[in-house]
Length: 151
Ligand code: HE5
View 1 (cartoon, rainbow, N blue to C red):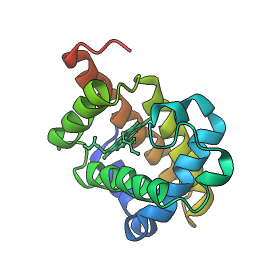
View 2: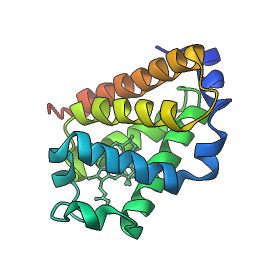
View 3: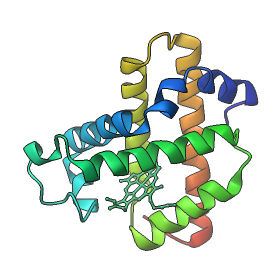
C-alpha cells in the first residue's frame, strides 16, 4: 500500500492534470483503446467508432475528464476516503460490468501518459505513482470481492 508521503509526492506533480482533466483524460482513453482495443467495446458510446472519430470527440473528452477528476479525488483522499472508491466499484461492477483487470490496464496507461506528459516526474515520484495506482487497484478489488463480482 502507498504511504501518505507517496500520495503527497504524487499530488505535488498533479497540478497540470487537476487543471486540465479533459485534455489528459482524452489522451488516457485514446491510449487505452489503442493498447487494448477490446476495452473500447466496454463503452456503449464509443464501441463502434472508428479511430478517426475518437479524435476531437467531445464525448470522449468529457468522459476522460470525469475519469481523471475521480482519480484526483482519490489522490486527495490519501487512500483513506473509502466512499469514493466504493461508489466507483459499485457502478463499475453492477452497471458497467468492467472486469477488474481493466483497472490494472488503465493504471498502466495512466502511468505511461503521466510520466510522458508531466515535466519533473522523477524516479521517486514515479515509484510513488506506481504504488498509489496499485493501492487504487487493490482497494477496487476488495470492493469487487465484497460485491461478489468475480470478473
Ligand atoms: O461510476 C461513475 O461515477 C461514480 C460513472 C462515471 C464514471 C465511469 C464510467 C467514472 C467517474 C469513472 N468511470 C471513473 C473511473 C476511474 C477509473 C480509473 N473509471 Zn470508468 N467507466 C465508466 C476508471 C476505470 C475504468 C476502466 C474502464 C474500462 N473505467 C472503465 C470503463 C467505464 C465505462 C464503460 C463507464 C460507463 C460510462 C460511459 O460509457 O461513458 C461514455
